Length: 109
Image (tube, rainbow, N blue to C red; front, side):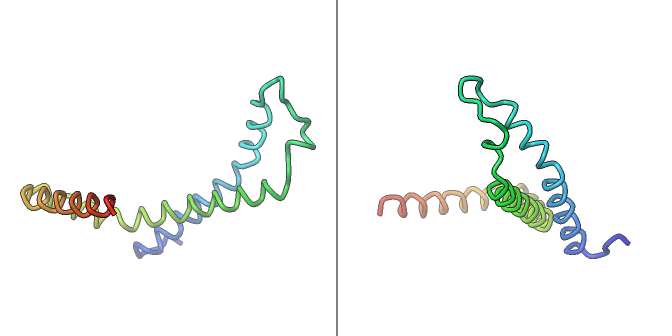
């Protein structure tokens, strides 16, 4: 059941990344617990807070899944843009100068 469309492939990729982040999160939590400095080491019951764990895992996994999904959707267009700019170097440099000028003007305000 492989998706046919680019959006479908990106959505499946995002879901797989989200699942991988959630599946690997107990190992990350255990690593953080074991790498505590010896002089400030907390007992596991104090270190591990389920509410914080679920929130940070959920938010982190969602951000990672969405970011990589969007990256997968944008990559073909970015490749076309950079290919065009590589062939039209003067235009690319002109656009870069204009963007730099706009940012410079905005930073002065």
